[in-house]
Each structure stands twice: as C-alpha cells, then as structure tokens.
Image (cartoon, rainbow, N blue to C red; front, side, top):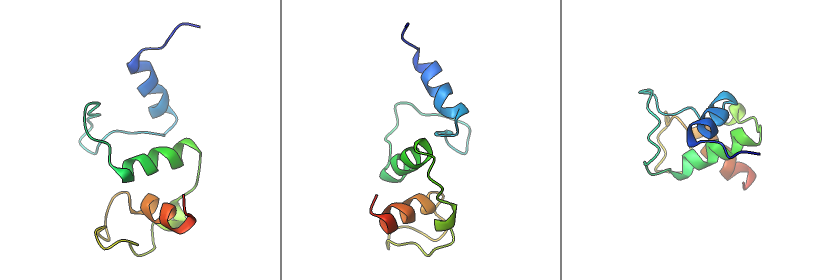
Length: 81
C-alpha cells in the first residue's frame, strides 16, 4: 500500500468529522495543539457522544462558560478519560 500524503490524511480525518480546523477556516498544521483539542480529536475519533456534557457548568475555573470545547473537557473530567 502506498503511503498517503499529509493532505490526504488530514482530509480523511476531516471527512469523518474528527477534525475541522479553526472557525476562521484555517488548519494551522504547525500550531500548538491544546489539551482540549486533543480531547476533541480523541472523542470524535472514537465516536464518543459528548453533546450531553455541553450544558454542564464548566468543571475547571479556567474554562469559561462559553468555551467552544467545554463539552469535551467536561466529558473527560466526568468520565476520567
């Protein structure tokens, strides 16, 4: 099997809704990946439903109520992931 390009790998993950880039439409492959972003990638990659954790209050004092990845942070904290 031939190795796939970085573009193909990213597109594969994007097509499966595992990653989606940033709200401004950029991907930023050389950017720092935060812990919350890793949680999102892990949950989406494992097809774990996290929507039910979105309405919960933030579990950490440094996570604001409208943090875009709060549901993944709450999921990990609640389940011990």
